[in-house]
Length: 281
Image (spheres, rainbow, N blue to C red):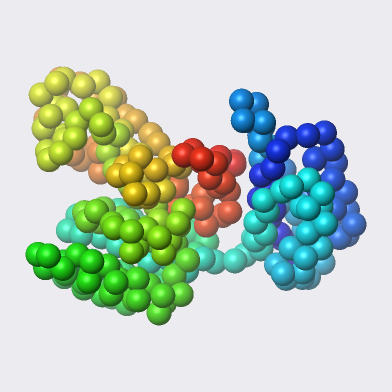
C-alpha cells in the first residue's frame, strides 16, 4: 500500500467532504487522517486527507482526482507520504538552529533529505561534514549581493532543492532567490518584531522588562519578516533574567519553533492562503 496526501483549497459549498471521501473509496483507499477548516469570512474550504491506496504514484492520483477538482474549483496538491523533499540549510555565524536541524535529520526525525549547507561565512564546514552534507561557502562582498544570490540560486538548482531553510541566515534575500522559491523558504526570527527592531533586540527587551519572549517561523516574502506564519512559541522571563539569559532562552525557542515549521512543511501539512498559513495537525 501507498500513503497519499491531498491538500485542498476551494470555495466552500455543500458536498465537498463527501466528494473527497467518495474519491478515496473509488481508489480502493482507506482514509487514515482527515482534517478540514472553513474560513467563513473568505468563504474558502481547506482540507488535508491522508489515505492508503494500493501501490501507486502521485501522477496517477492527481489525474484520477482531476475530475473532482474541476467540479468544485479546487486547488489541489498531491503528495506521497514517504516523499522526502530535498532541503538546503542556510546559516550565518550562529550555529544553534543549523546544528539542531542536522541532528534531527540524522536521527530520522525529519522526513526530508538535507542535500546542502550554505553559509556566507566558513564557520560551519566541520559541522556539515560531520553530518555528511556538502558545505558551500558563498560570501557576500560589499556591492555583490545580487551576484551572490545568482550563484546561490544556481547552486540550489544543481542540488534540485525543493525547500530552503534559513537557519539564522543573516542576509536579506532579494527577488532573485524569493522568486525562485515562492512559499518554499522558511525563516526564523525572535518574536520581538516589530516592537524591538534593529540590532540587539534582547538588550532592548531586557531594558523594557518584558515578561515573555518568543520565536516565529514563517515563509519568507519580499515584506521582511511579514510572511505567512507557520509556528510560534513563547517562554516567560522576568526581571531576574540577564541579557545572556534572554539570548539563551531565545535560542532554545528558535530551534524548537524552526524544527516544528520545517516538520509541518515536509509532512505536507501546510497550505498558504493570502498572508496566513493553514497548518494541519
